[in-house]
Length: 464
Picture (tube, rainbow, N blue to C red):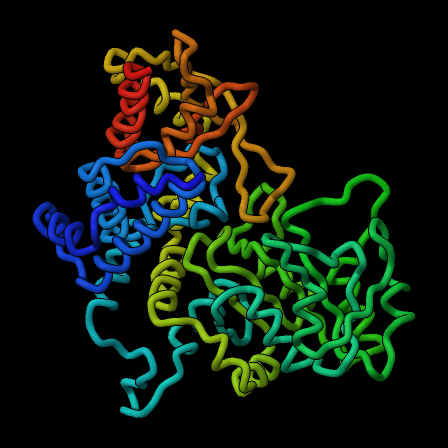
């Protein structure tokens, strides 16, 4: 039965707005104030009708609405501490920017700039040309173009160069990436015709060769950066495909989607963009915000004649990179040109951070703050990963802060939930009913925020 008495106790909109205006300590638009208040009252009435609320307080209603307004005024995107052990965490913003990159980019973004203006001629310029020479220098490509992400790069290439034509793809490379986003869907949207060759675990040169005909425009190779098929497997390398093309199919386009975008040769085994081009790929595309460590972008490199076709395709306008991302990409690439990426680009720095340095960081935190909390803080060896669909089989030795309630009143899940609600949220990892905060991606500058979050558990613990 609906509690009509409670419904009648809800203050009027005018009364609430008057009370709120007396206590609000920040600027907010009058329309927003009314909308948030109205939405809250609608929700309140719904909860009363469902029997979820048994009593009402006018002061509590004002406090609840004030909290909603504060959160609205602050925005929903928050800085947080990544203690998951995943460096390129897709849900936490992937690669983060370095202070060096941000400072350089800010000076170019806070004023007008030559985004599409040629300073030498005084005429309209091309935004892609601003980073093209940097990309070509770093990859060895003839030409380059940048769009807003790598899925857009794939869509543009297939739409411009293979529409209504067959594209051969190994069945073992027919990938799905995050959010149930599948490569065949992109290919279908582009108008190209997917033709799978080989099997899930084995694809041979003959599988490609037997399926090339007059309707075939391209062979697409996709680097399976977010999974690996191991065991009884085989795939055809780009160099082998290039030799086949040279001998039999000179008009066939060889395109490799590398995804992760590794520019520097390392011992991790991730193929570099330069190596793919050197092996014979006509076009290579990759992401800007994965291993490259920059902003979201889809970077396409390769033969100038093919890139020129992409530059004139109508779809490019819809997929073009925005001003801020382009400036951030340029400043990120300049760190590679200066050979400072391993120091100044956080993604690269975290990948190569030594376990000894991480261990010392955790120990330093425990020594400095154990006395300030009744929770038990201890050192725990663990494993970190790159994430972001990169190096799925690669783990890095790391160290984590182990958080335990010695009184066993707070479970790992309870602690983690409350850390997520801190002023600066902390995202960790739960294993075997124990909460860990991996320090691979945590700087000493975050210690005070981490401690403040941990101390909120103290407040909650005392109230238990």
